[in-house]
Length: 403
Image (cartoon, helix red, strand yellow):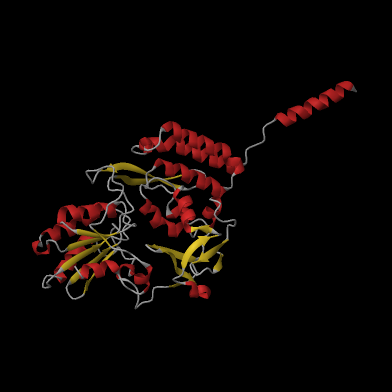
């Protein structure tokens, strides 16, 4: 009998010491994170320019150890924090492909010089359009911005500012950052002091009301879904909106430029405006035909303007530098979200288990003599405030008209 008891105790002890099986989802995350640790240093042009390999490896191992205690959105935020420490705004998992998988709040925001405002919302709440947001779940917008900056790879604060509106719509990200306590709702505190609840998520059938009415939409907010278009404003100013450095279906950029100047051949151009405010990149080579054509128009010396802002990034930023350098363009607006000398020429890699898309840089672009400059400053600063925008006034264009 005594032997049987001893044997029974031995079996219990052995059973207790046996390791618990790793849940499949945790195992998949661990494999993918180890995959990043192995592949990213090899694929990236210079991964350890801002973080040492020792610190990178330590951060990876720390995240792996914490996985059993984390939910999926917290693991993703943990990964994003590591990418943020790499310090390359082109490298990470902070892309639309990944973030669109989260529940997205049925409201859109925009950041102006005077704060964050609601610019789109569900029809039943449209009376809150144009309202300033000062807090989310009692945490000030400044506190929210600071926490989002911790998970966003960036080279300057202007890039963070340009990205804030997108992150404010992502319940799970905000919850993982301990800014809200739900994956499907949060409370907004408005500038008036009123508190409102945002609930539910958008779908393909969700229709949001906009604060921008057809007769009161500033020029730069018009036709943003078109890569490039132009119009003549104020009788003698040619305005070219260049939203994306990518060819459009049906007409190449080169052909578009040829047709535009053919239409303008008998027109006396007083000023030529290239609007890069919303241009976040693509191929910087695409602009070559425009630059070459404008070089033929010596009469436009000192009359070419480039509009830039916090969303001017990557190849859009390179193009801003090019028109400044090669055409003597006057840059106006706000500092860019991109760094003049920066990593880029991205490649994409789908992680084997979670199928998240990782982007990474394969080239370092040197466009500016001072490598320490983190943003491209305009020649003339022009404020982008909510009052002008909501009244259909494009402050950049008004500046150009008056100068």
